[in-house]
Length: 184
Image (cartoon, rainbow, N blue to C red; front, top):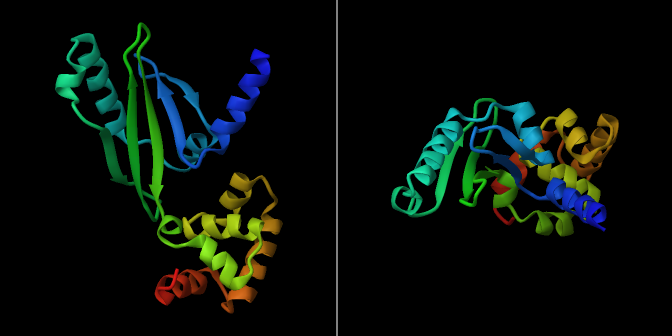
């Protein structure tokens, strides 16, 4: 039973829309879901995460966590190589074995557009919508393929279909059209 629960938990964690990474007191990674691994493989974790993490653990050791960190703890950052800003939100566990979790959230174009409305308007399939969302987030075809566990050729096929349905010729035209249209 416990093994089945762990499999369910793994599936849920790997399919969350945010990256999650958990550090122990030594700032060693004890858990990293699929989104966090993809982030780590594409970009470098900002140095501020380690700096803030160490300060949080120091505050826990001094029994001053609530005093030194009274509200939400987060770092907002533009990452080199990414077209979007990122927010790293900390959650803190003070128990006998304290840990820090960090949710990694991309402030992406796909979150600013109503992708569901785009899907309905252009009769885009669910899988094409998955590809579109990642294209809007600035991912390359190979990154989309990796994230959606499909071949790069399948990504290209989905993109060709989307371009045809929207009436554009390439990804740049697609993004420009959807942003400038202002209806989504």
